[in-house]
Amino acid sequence: MTDQIEWVALSIFIFFFALVTVMGFFAARWKSGPVSAHLDEWGLGGRQFGTWITWFLVGGDFYTAYTVIAVPALVYAVGAYGFFALPYTIIVYPFVFAVMPLLWKTAHASGHVTAADVVLGAYNSRGLELAVAITGMVATMPYIALQLIGMGVVIKAMGLAGELPIIAAFIILALYTYSSGLRAPALIAFVKDIMIYIVVLVAVVIVPARLGGYGAVFAAANDAFAAKGGATGLILKPGQMLPYATLALGSALAAFMYPHTLTGIFASKSADTIRKNAILLPAYTLLLGLIALLGYMAHAAQIKVSSPNDVVPMLFKALFPSWFSGFAFSAIAIGALVPAAVMSIGAANLFTRNVWKSYVDPAITHAGEAAVAKIASLVVKLGALAFTLFLPVQFALDLQLLGGLWILQTFPALVFGLFTRWFRAEGLLLGWATGILWGSWTAWSNGLKPVAAIDLGGASYAFYVGLGALILNVVVAVIATVIVGLISPNRSGVVARS
Image (cartoon, rainbow, N blue to C red; front, side, top):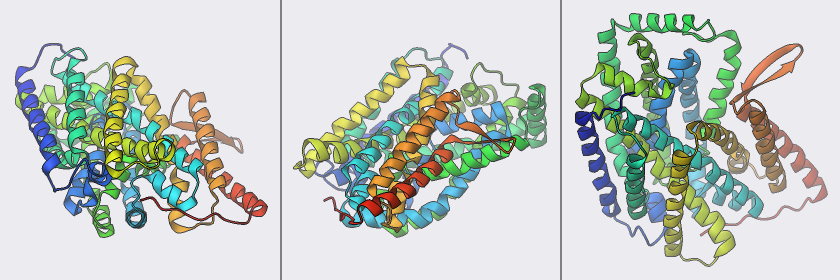
């Protein structure tokens, strides 16, 4: 990638970045509410977001800047296997429709702000609460780092070298998130999503037209994969089908366990709002499919890069004028700000409610909670910035893969308690620990790859490690619950958080 500064693209980029910065600070006065007086106001936007705001907010933090960079990069590198993100975003919305309204009702009735609050209310277990909270915070850190990495890719494409641009963007993000809380990314998400839709719709029309049509695009991609020796291609190989399916299912179950996606659920004003969003959000899946096709288009455009992550920026630089490239790069960068802000808020809510309030200051006031959460959000973003600046990019990628595995292990504690109180806290905690330990060890033993293989009956089966760990988690939780029930049949009561 060139180090020559693209001044036209950079000017467009700075204009839109400045626009959303102003919007971020203005958001403190949007949808009136004393932002600093209550954690509900700072961390959940007053729990008043309707259908359209929730649609943009959840879509904005679910479909991130790194998604726009990484999905086409994966398709460019491995072909059809990279499309596993599409079925997973199809599977997830029926789950959201069926489960998340019930979660919202439980949280709204008891004043819960986080998943760990809900778990504490269901099982009255401080240990299980802390396990869910720590898992959420740890899994979020590398995810934020990946947003900054995605932003860094487009900044580098405009010829800006060094770490100063990323640091400047971090400072701006930190300041308006501190000031406005969840209202800032909710407002900015409107601009971000509209820009991304414009960029993608223009690209999927103009790029194939310049490359000879979609037939030529697919033919060029097929030739490129064939030249690699046939391990990749336009259709799945037989050995890829099981890992593809398990990756899609496991990713779908994990998607709404993350603090940032749950924050959008808790911030909705009604259960009906969530149901409507489960119906409307698949529009983003269509967008994601179009984004993924950029990976094939890069082959047709003869794009050669040292890292697949550079594919999308280089494609736009090669085929579009500088002003549109600047618009596309600003859309991607703003697409990093929205999820990074929500992620830091979600992690800060967990720390405030389930660590600080539970173990440091149980008598803390509502305003005190908001103040602690503000500081915690800065620390989380600072940690993510440190990931970006001081550790190899691959390290952040590896930790994010582990983060998905880890957050999936909170599924039984959070979701099962919405439907049944049969499970015991001791069983769920033991299941969580087993899933975390076995999954981490298995992933580490396989070079931190998300897929592992098991030999059964003389045949080898590859599967997503996170889903395998979840199955083991549930089995252990069931067995432990039965044993604990036999030893100690009395079940402790539930508690509510105010």
